[in-house]
Length: 184
Image (cartoon, rainbow, N blue to C red; front, side, top):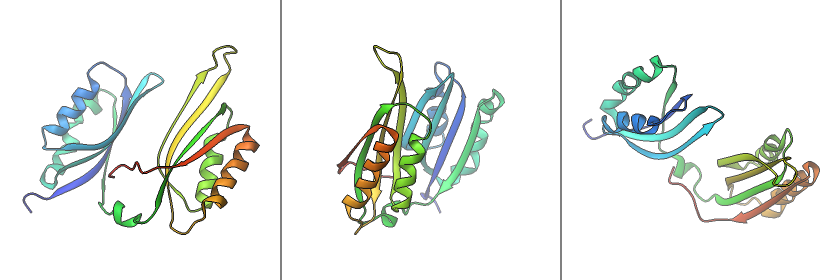
């Protein structure tokens, strides 16, 4: 049908260079596409783009071909068509912000994700980083996550499990209710 749009998750990873974001977004715009939500970051010496794009369904077939020049330069591309029922699936779920800070060590993200999964909580977004402490140079870990909690799940049960995990890992965990949610 004319006018039908489709949603696609686009991931692109490869060497970081000036103008890469402009190049990628131009290719999307030339096909009538719009970036709905995205995360872009330099990780090590590479650059990673993760985007939810909306574009006319008729342009979907040509999207992969539009990125062939970048793939030929060594960039890795994936395109995954997705449904649009996210809002319906999580209607009535409550958003919370979770922050974790402390000395970096293996397993922090896994332990937090494990507690959330055991409680039936879904992760909407998660950003993590490590920086060197000012005085000692020791690596410090930081995480911010937006999660959705199912209706009827008591906050004290899953929050206390997160705090116990935080104590076991020797990191600080802060949970706060939020009304900030991305549309997708």
